[in-house]
Image (tube, rainbow, N blue to C red; front, side):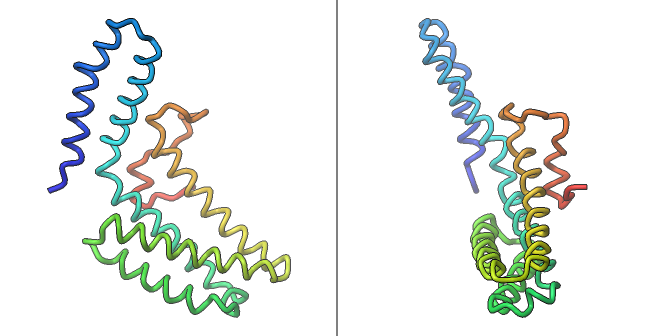
Length: 179
């Protein structure tokens, strides 16, 4: 059993019920402000900890989709990295199909996918401009979907300049990509 949520709840309760009131009554405004930031961080972690598996899965799904799109390009199939891409893509499909895959497995696979895509981009530097642009557009589209997920993930922190345009996190975690 994972006690992370319980531990974060206990820490949040201690901050709310004891630490914050004590600092408020002490008159130390800077310490109180910093304690509020710690409390906010604890609350954010508490609210996100149970979604980490889904987030990592979504990230792998997006990277795997990008890799599949890139592997469909004739110019990419001729590159030295194409065999590695096929291998990592197949591995990602296996992990995605297995319902018991963990956040750690998704995270490790995300690193492999990222490294393989980085190798592709390095090789693509030597391709003709129109072909390279096709690859770059696909990567940019993926980056925009990743940014959309990041904005939804971080929304509770109150830092987004236009929160009304942020899509629902649960929708994005279920594979609802950008429209």
